[in-house]
Length: 484
Image 1: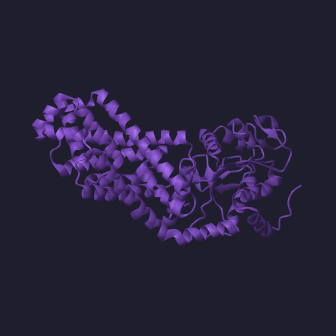
Image 2: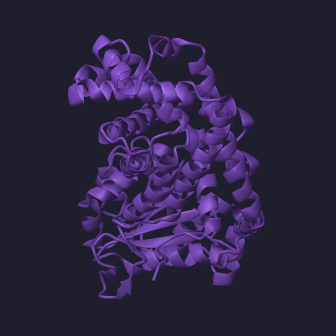
Image 3: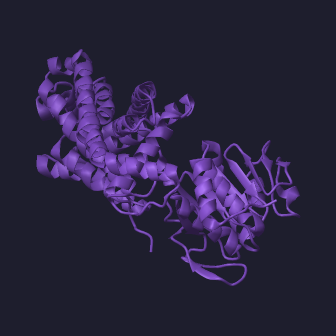
């Protein structure tokens, strides 16, 4: 049975790979994902303000806020949005040589500013929605109070509170990366974020909502009067919402967040697992088998292979066998809803995970075996089609053999690409340039003809990731002479 979570070393390796992908995001997509993350965190902040604004007991108020606020980061992680504080972990990708300093800085600057835009968008929507009128304007008064507290922080408190906050936020991100299913990710996020909110630490992106929301509320005379009545806030204090203290406080919290996330968490975890990660990478380059353990984690290359009832077992399991000989991790993914797969020739085997439990973000590629009616079952599955399109668009490997390239054609990922398939399925390669060859490689798409070319197909996948030396070593172990 497959493990339900990744080891700490695998967890770090997964994030290093994720950081590389983050650094390569097109600018427009990076901005949109940054805006989304800022909006998600702001929604968490707005919801927690509503929850606690009428509670005078600080302990109870913070506890309830800690229960509500994590929804923001949960939405960020599940939707794949780009959050500045979490992206501080990308320094691990820089230390491992996967990205440049320029790429790291580009991502952090763009995402930081985009988070601010997303936060301000929610501030505007909340102000226009009338939400601050709750409790006869009590929420508006409370929003002013919260903003004043955050923009008038003593410098050392702003810095240290920022450090403590992002220690917990980055731990939440890493722990979520250790989980293989959505429920596991949600709980992994919840408790560290509950701890940071309950403890009252400072998060720069959250403050991008709290402070501007207070500024907006302070434009309403009724909210200001109520704030003076309820909390003793003076007119002079209100003016400090628009003073240079705001920028100073936000920058100090941001610096603290960077120290906490980069130094205390990212660098520490990288140093702890550096030797194991380098050993795994070296093993992968040599094409040798890597033993799965915390000391020697799976290689950083990880694939998934969809399996459906009626698949061609040799085409599927040959790929699994060859990948594991080469030191490439591969998980068999059942689309049936159960782990049991029955092939087109009534061979029954057990898949590693079901499609709803697979961690698609951790895969560097996806593979589809052919066979009938397995190919039809794959083509009819919404998850399979979405994964194919997502992987092809993001530049991840998409490989299919026998009749399965027809599923790639159906997903419109073969347009303009060279491809091959089992005889009789040529017309289903929509938009492709058909090639009558055993295996065809075109950019991140690999296709092959059938069971007789399964080993050649698998070896081309090995070559795609590890190169010719690894292929020769595997061929020697297989006593493989090739196909014509």
